[in-house]
Image 1: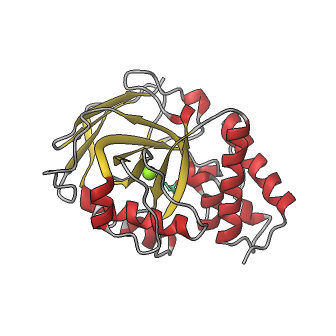
Image 2: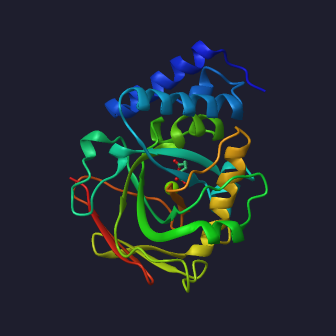
Length: 263
Ligand code: 0L1
Ligand code: MG
């Protein structure tokens, strides 16, 4: 049950968007609104989406966050969260990631998919997702919580668009046929050193179960995942802090690699 009126939702959306655009950290919003609930939090996130669209930006995709059992246990939750990716979050491989536009970025290796048909919940299954996936592609997410020192609670982070900031895709896009998405190995290197490794199963047991869960969560708002949507399924590796001058390479089994550098 929502606790905020529409004006407060809009004010908090404007506040968090300004923090994002000015790369300025803020206190978590539950300090001021301790009773904030999930419905409020997603209402703020969707209000941020409307602000972006009014400003002429396009939704470039959706993402799932907190998809590892370890991260969920850390946050004391049983369900992941979703968020929006906007067009200007996309950085081409080889282009610099500008640290002056970010607060305290962290890098996560993820598996992305593009859907060839609509998906809707409730009750969306991995089988339905498999039949709907057109392309699987590697992607690297750069998260950047707008909250001071990444200190937040679940509802604050949902309102803050799940820390979404930038993403890079590249490598090799493949049909899901014959790909073992569960066993797909990933090696993340920072400045030439291996700093994290993982496999697709780190994402809710199977990266496509994350997409099914997204369809179910959107169904609660009467929304579907439209055909053509790009979805980032969630972090396979731990999120690794990045600073100006750092470079990262992520190698994906069967899907090539992605390199990025922070300038
Ligand atoms: O993409 C993610 O899993 C991030 C979710 C938000 C939590 C965080 O900022 O670590
Ligand atoms: Mg992520």
